Image (cartoon, rainbow, N blue to C red; front, side):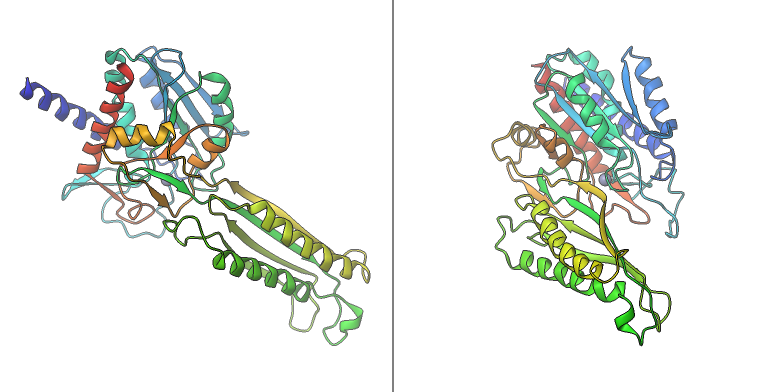
Length: 394
Ligand SMILES: [Zn+2]
């Protein structure tokens, strides 16, 4: 009996590894189409008579995919992951990043850690899910464009709310070393464009420098950043333990002796789960309105416009939530951690789902050349999925 179980475990692990290689082989770098991967998954599901739903981007070049295994009832679990990966351009790889190579007890390849292994392990378990006679369903939610501003998932999450009976929990399989991660920061990406009035730089009374006008705006961001850093945080596990604001890019002016007509800067707010980024943004906007009004008194064309480039909400902890207790039961560990990065779990939570992060591999390997996942992590995730199947078949 024990022998048989060990054999079954070995076979499950081998199938998982096969699927990891199968998914890594698709170059789904975010700027490319992920449709070949999606088609492969659809064809695999067809073989089991499982129907799936695509939620495509507007150009039809990329798609999210969701489907369910098991009965159409409430109380299921969504397993979610992004299909896209970051570029390998300019990175020194020891082997082909799109061909999984096993060495030193690891699997090397782009996306092995972040985060095709989780998806592959779950997909490889579909036959076992079907055999188990699930009483509550396992839903899959595969997204695109996560690595370029978490752009893909929201449309799918929207559809999921109506398409499936309310699930108990969402597990987003970002690499957490199979630990429960129940909070992460959010992000609002912003671009502010200041339009001034050109003149010779000796004639400051005849123009309005967009760069000079940007200075109080930048000072405001600095002030907000310092205040956020000084605030006592409810969560010391976040790195750093507070909301951050910073300017990443700035450009403006055409010559040293011309008062700049435009100045543009790209900045972001990364709110801690319990902070309100909209309040910070409103304070910035009030400052910008004041500066703009003063400029406009002199030149009507002057303007300050701030656009949102990206938005993803933070994930806040729900210590008594179903997701937290499910992952604790499946991993046998009660502790939870906070992630330094932004993930799709916050988007699920904002849509009313109880979401948590838990997946194989280490975030330290993500986005690196020679990205890898430890085989022990793959095995741990296979066991995790099998325990989930058992729990939902009970
Ligand atoms: Zn990821």
